[in-house]
Length: 76
Image (cartoon, rainbow, N blue to C red; front, side, top):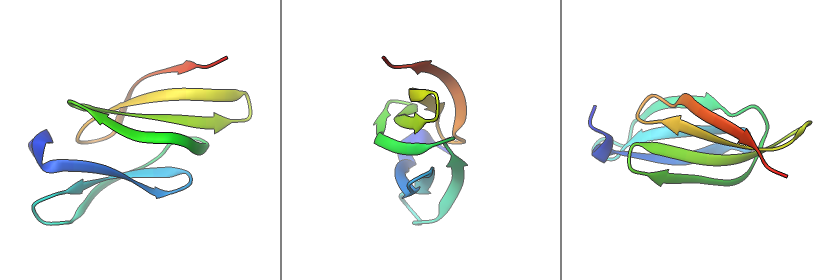
C-alpha cells in the first residue's frame, strides 16, 4: 500500500490507527504504551506521538503504513 493513500488518527487515548484514504478502511491499529499527550503528527513516511507513561513522557516515531516502532526517546 502506498504511503500517500494513508492517514493516521487516534483510535482512543491509548491507540493510533492507519486509515486508507481511498476506501476508508482501517488498516492497522497500534497500542502506544500509554496515554497520548500530543499527536499523531504525520511527516512523510512516519508518524510521531508523545505518550505519557509511568516513567514520564516519551516521544515515539512509527513507520507507515504498518506502524512499526522506529525510535523512541524520553522527554525531560
